[in-house]
View (cartoon, rainbow, N blue to C red):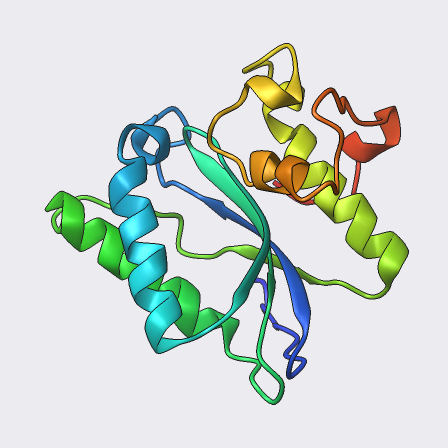
Length: 165
C-alpha cells in the first residue's frame, strides 16, 4: 500500500488535479453553478486566492495561493467536495476520487508552466479547437487582465508537466 505524504508550505502556491469517481461523468460541467457555490462558500470560511481554474466534465485543475501562515489546502478540498456532493443529494453514491494530486509551485517558471497547463487542458482533451472556446475556465478572466492574449494556444511543452493522472 502506498504511503501518501503531502507537503505543506504555509502561504504556498499550489497546483491541484481533482477527479470525479466516475471518469466518464460530466457532473462538474453539468452542475457548474453548484460547484461555484461550494467554492465561494468555502473561500469565505477558508480564504485562498484562485490564480487559475479550469473545470472539465470529469476533473478540474487549479492553482491556489494560500494566505501567509496557512498551509491547510486539504481542509479546503474536503469542504468543497463535501459541499458540492451535498448540493447534489448524492450521499449514497461516490462523487469524488478519495485523493487529489497537489504540487507546490517552486518558482516563476514552474508557475508559468502550470498556468499554461491549466489553460491548455480542454484543448489537450479534445474538448475544443481553441483554448478561448472553453467556457469553464479562468482563462477568460486572465485575458481581460491582459495576462494572456485571447488567441493564445499554448506551446507543445505546456502539455507535459509531469502530472500523474
